[in-house]
Length: 408
View 1 (cartoon, rainbow, N blue to C red):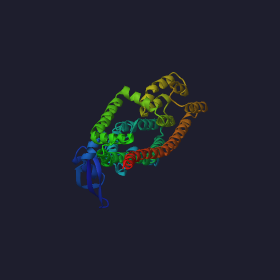
View 2 (cartoon, one colour):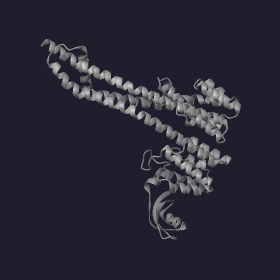
View 3 (tube, helix red, strand yellow):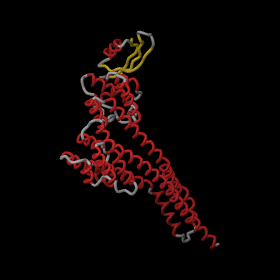
View 4 (cartoon, one colour):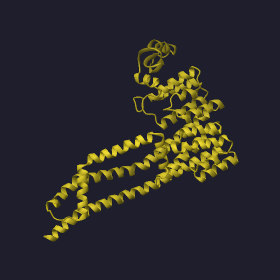
């Protein structure tokens, strides 16, 4: 089905109107507009929207526009508000089409509305657009449809997406300054070694006198960087491509994700992020009415660590045999003891959903504080490293000058 952009005159008021409409052809699009009380004056097919509709969600980063977590959260909350106000599902989808300015979302909503009009459930229609609506989103909507609590589920989804967008923005803003400092420091070192040092040290080389060891190291390093810079870049690019190829393989991805958990500082931070995602997804799915096993299936699909995913089969097998969630989680040896104890407490009190959400909130706060501490550590480390390099540079240049002055 193609998507058309139109300009029309509203028959009732005589005012101009414009927008987009989906139809099998231009003639059908004109008829649809007339049925809506519009007199079309100009209509043409939108190539970008039509391609996005036919291709699911369109290409990544294409003309459809990037859809952020905050955009999706706003759309989800507005959708819930319309449904809570009593608007029928198809009408609410149509209103959301007009509301959003993102072409990818518009194209997806057209397709979703048509699927729902054809008799499909909202969850099944959303599942056709996995780049926009992940497994967590789709399964929560399905659970809401079955339980009759779709509006509450949509508000809960909006809260999750807004929380994730806020956390991501905080992490990005915290890391921006040290990353800039690091890149600036590297750029300064490269500039000094490739352009400034050779002009200074050439004076010492012409003296044909024995140079101090630091000066020789500085000259050799500067010469190597200036001569073989292309080799250094090639090695870096080659290593990066080799690493990408390795982690694209299932066994390589599992080993890499396992290795990430052992990195100093970052390993503990990554573990907290995975645990927070697990707890929040699991708690939200249980709050939405899913039972334990289907919820674990959804959790397994949204975890971003392949090493954890490999052990989720053991957890699901334990739950399938009738065991409590905390026991198989403990046996994996991956989850922190604090999380296990809180899950056990939630199971005993019958409030495991709320307890899992509290676990996620605790780890999210811990991640934020940990990143702030790491950032506070990175800044002085960069300053110290730059100070050591500048000190070495000054000593390497001053030593031969002092030697020459003594000889004179």
